[in-house]
Amino acid sequence: MSSSPAVPPPLSSLLLPYLSPPHLVPFLFFHPHLSIQPLLSLLLPSLLALGSSASSLSSPGMDGPSPSSTRAQPPPRGSFALVDAIEFGGSTKGFMEEVMRQWGMNKAGTGRKWLGWEAFVKDLEEMDDKGDQQQRSRLLVVDRVEKLRGPSLGFGPGGLASSLASLGTMTSKSLLTIVFLSPTPWDSLRPIPSTFPDPPIVSIPAFSPQETVTYLLSNPPLPPTSPLFTHYQPFLTHLYSIASPYHLSPLVLLRLAHSLWPVYIAPLSQPNGPHQLAHLPSTKEGIALHLSQRCREAFQVAISDPTALPGSLDQFRRAEGAAGIVGLAKSKQQQDSLTTNLPRMAKFLLIAAFLASYNPPRKDLMFFGRGRWEGGGKKKKGGGTRKATSGGRKGTVAKIPQTILGPKPFPLDRLIAIFGSLLAEHDRPDSSALRDEQWEEEVGEIMASVSVRALISNLVGLHLLQRTSPPDRLDGIMLKSELGWEEAVALGRGLKIRVEDWWAGDD
Image (tube, rainbow, N blue to C red; front, side, top):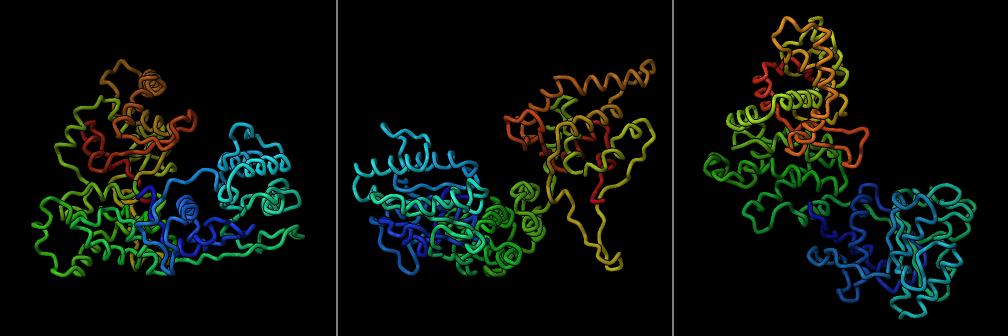
């Protein structure tokens, strides 16, 4: 996804008149539809930069500037400040020092420490006395203002939000405009009793279907000059028709589009794709129908949980050729290379990580408990998932297999525990002199050894494991497997482990 997506014309035409200097209205409230809030938060820096440079742009008409003219421009320092109440709303001091930093009040002679409202207004007026009319026109946008709560931060008497709303009346030398932005209605935020008048409210409606598709088209995952671009609009039309009942946010739909496009277009993007797909319909609509039917399951997985993208589609992306969009296997040569080139302990760790990612924790005791590798457990034969049938229980819904949903993160301790169970059952030396107690003790020492931790780090570096927790976190380390089903089966076969027997499915 582009790091600086184009500003949609509906937003630019509606908001730029309020964000362009000189800012003559002291107080405004932007109320976006809930589906627009994430996109608006992302595009606020671009909108503010456009507003501050509006004098060099033509005045936006009803359709607003074109997408090519509404890319993010370098923001001029000192003319506006954008503060996220979620990030900086923990204290008045932290919030206001961020405003001072963005307004350039940390230059020589002013400092950047927050010393109260009186000192703040005095420093601001002294700074604006030395500037021109353009510099004295300042804008502050507070995103997610509903997060400013509590006696010292909210809209009560003396609260930060109330003081900000009245900031324009505190100075006669600086032209200040304060914009509050929130998907929460103003009536739910208005203080009672209020110490200031209600602001003008600018409602930002949800995008229409045509506006949404236009926005998605203006931020494509491939160059418009690509021969495949002709298939992008039919793809978007199909995606919108099945995803919009569940996701109205243009930003979520854009994420879906960028993640699903490689799966959708895979048959045509292969080097010999056009020759393999000579049987496709001759019309663009027929091709779109054919491609959408082939990746129906991938669409279902992505739409069910967009927050898991793009990882939940990895197995679809790895498919090769026109007939393998939903195939999970890599070539036998790749599997053999993986099986032969890794240390034995690393292979056990990879199998353990795969089982931890694709089996629910509640199955661990049954699958990997002490009784299992002592002979007291019973292996579950066969894999697969249950399917709901018309004659089944009322209300039963067929679950999407975890192999399709993708790997789930798991804690490091769980990986080590499953690793130890696999090791105890499948790596015991053929020596009658080694008693059960001795073997248990030896396995425990291996599990606690530094070398196992080093192996895990190496597997992360090889992208066979993925660390999902922050790199600087020492406690609560979370990982997930990067191994596919066929890779895990091939790897287990080399260790004489039937991965199928350790498979919980969707029970």
